[in-house]
Length: 511
Image 1 (spheres, rainbow, N blue to C red):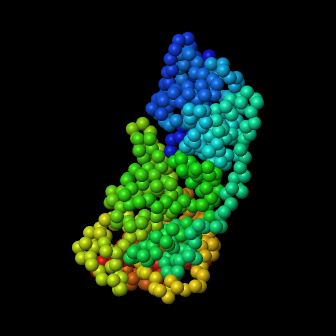
Image 2 (image 1 turned 90 degrees about the vertical axis):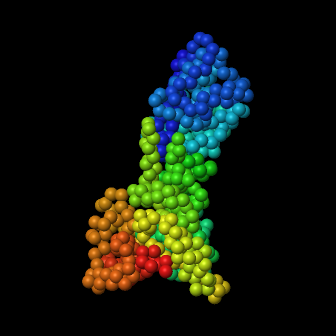
């Protein structure tokens, strides 16, 4: 007897339907074919124990299971449940005439209970696209899969529940989630708020500009100046995620297995990897490719604290994803692409001792040590960071001030208004949504300067010895400042403010 059961495999952030064909014949044996990995090959032991502990048995026959398409590598333990169901139906231990209308996924424990799986959301999206009636999966993953409307999603806690469902005597009901209600819940209550930060008004202004234009930013300052505290609050002033962005972000976290019984993500991600991170962990990859930190930060913020402490080759692999806003991982037999459109916030000390440019502390680093320290960050990487700002320690009178600072919600209103202007501006242009993404051609079109502004920019570049690459960055940032002012044209005061935010481009900055 031949039985077909359907599951799914996830490659990148997309799912592919897998057909498990179970054939019973005379003889004894268990043959699993179709490029399964070791975790799937071991499934026979888990299935046998789970069946026995639920009053069923692995039949004493020759069992041949093909996982089609057979040339596609299958991995992970999430195929236990569909394989077990195929064996039960194929051996006539249960009747399930409708089983071919469902996608079934789940890892079995020896007692028949189910363990969570990865990639539930992309699997549910694919099941809906291909017209399946429903999707059975572990109850821990049901919230993320139930986001998909028009598909019956059943959260199953053990093998017996799904057997009872097909026997028509269970109480299993599809999980229904109001996606929009889930999305708008807790939207306006950021965990970290700018009202907690005392002083640093110029830095807050800089953060507001960076958030409004999607600009990458680097904070340079001595230890204890508040760089990390400020960086952690950037997501709280970014515009609220759209439903499309929320689905994209949830998909990536679902593939990485990071959702932990959460439905739709409605807060922008904030990722802060340690400086010992490897290339693969940062950009993604591995023998079975998984998304890296830059993809986990998609539609959110990637914070690299103490930037020069990261290995130089790790920082260099980030250059191309910063430009293309996606990362492609190629292997001999397949290629996967993960989105990585994030805002980079980096921080660093100005010197190895940390106290260069601090008048209250002696500078104990020699010019040679400082040059070596700064050379860990390459010019091409700095070229992709629009805003450089120096952070100085907060004086006591500001720290002890009891007045409440401006909250993140108030700043976010201005940022959102500026982003809406940019959305209208770039509505006709593919893959450009905010100012930081502008090409040189678009800069010339949308950042036209009057004579006074041109003269100001020319003088600044000559007097401050700004590098040529600073020119485009200044114009992009000035365009964002103009948007925050609701100004159609970039004028001299916008250029003047943008010039201040290019500290590291000034020749002789180290001395």
